[in-house]
Image (cartoon, each protein chain N blue to C red):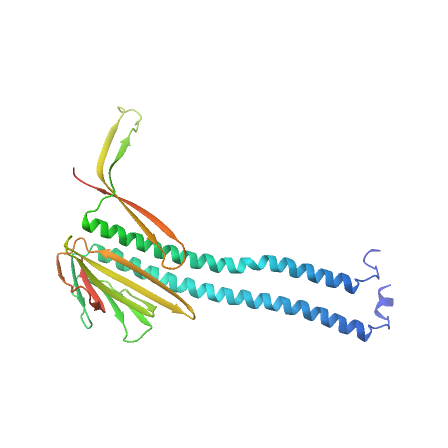
Length: 174
Length: 120
């Protein structure tokens, strides 16, 4: 039975063969375009998630620590944190910038990559309080994401902050 | 056994119809790819809105703006076995501060509410 089939000398006609190739070709082309679309969407999504995650982490770290700071000093560049002080610094002169966060122990440094990163200080004269405006912008291909946060320096006692200035680094103690 | 040795194949029309059905089903599922990306972007807008709302609350705290005078009551009505029943109520007065934030792009809106205890 099986042997008889295997020894069957009849082949397929040229028309049948071409038809099969054409149909398989169409199906494969459709499958490929699905696959490519899926890959593209995944890359776009993971890039977007990455810049969002970094901006979110940066604002969380900065706002949580800076909010309870007792003394804050902002500098354009070059300062180093003293004992017991934290430092948040924008690294680099041209984008992409990195945010460097130095703890008093000095052994934890974190860097995130941003196209724009700024610390700005405002002063509310009626309340007599300082605010730090922190904003981070990440760009990935044609997608961009900005997260901005304003923090009240509630416990701020001794500061060298000039409102309206763009600072590169902020050093603070708790 | 007889079915396996069936010599009849598929006609071209059957194969093409099967391929068309496959494409229709795949196109219907195509939307899932896009919605994943939209959800990620939407989560980003939400974070933006949360930070805007936090900024508003910080501004209100600084200027002493309050939205409502309120109190929170903590009740401890625990009954401890083999001991006298304990019943305590602690009332904390304070102010409620609301913050509403919007994303710059998209239509995400977040409302935050905080309670600050205050000695009256």
